[in-house]
Length: 136
Image 1 (cartoon, rainbow, N blue to C red):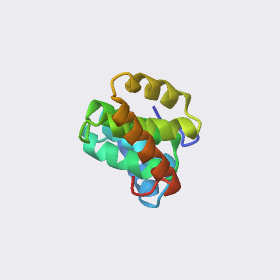
Image 2: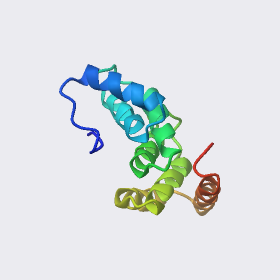
Image 3: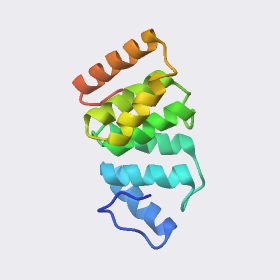
Image 4: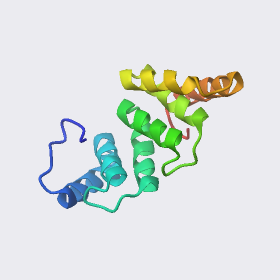
């Protein structure tokens, strides 16, 4: 569940405290881990909206795992409005940054999308990459 390199915490509440401190300083690994803590309710009450917020911050720094997790939030409508276009966009970006899981999920969501939705998702992904993932 946790990003390797950050260590496996013994106490979820303590982990949240340290992840939050690092996440607020802009650490993408901590932002991803804090998103996971909120998504699964580990050390904090489960809150998909807050999880999506932390995933987005890490995704905007180019973190492929956060991009994939954020895409799943869009696909499932957890913490964000359900939107296959944005799910595809983030999975497409994650795939381009090296996430094999993003490639698999991107390809599966394509089956549920129209050609105009696919075109829009691809356009948004190109724009997002051009903006270095900011404001996507």
